[in-house]
Image 1: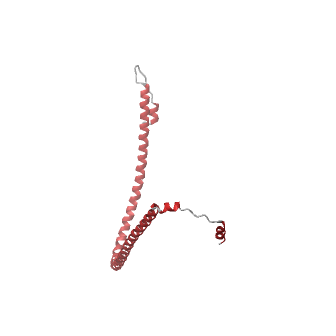
Image 2: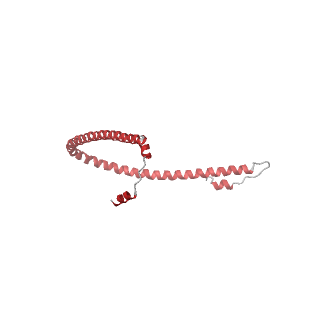
Image 3: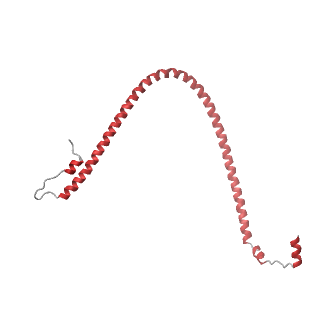
Length: 170
């Protein structure tokens, strides 16, 4: 019967004159216990894995046998269906080729249209950007002009009381 971690832990050594260092022996035994427990756990996990895989293998073996039987039946049926399918396939292929050509033509037309629209949008973007730049430059030019200084120096003439009254009534 193999040793258990408890057997290792409970092992007592006789002491002799000038025997081993007890602390070193205990540390070593503790390490052996840890390693041994880990090995036992790994072994148990591996045994469980082997069991699981064996069950899966049996399951898949059964499936394989069933599939082999099904394949034989399917092969017989397939030969019959194959002849009918070949005739239908030829018709479907012809129809699919026609549809594919139509779809490709439509896609090419759409892509050409989109390319033209993109180019038009790029052109419009350049025009709008140029216009906006000109507008901003004109505004900057206006801000930098001396007319603003003249406007700031402009004084509003005093309006006498009678004219104020007339303006407020109208």
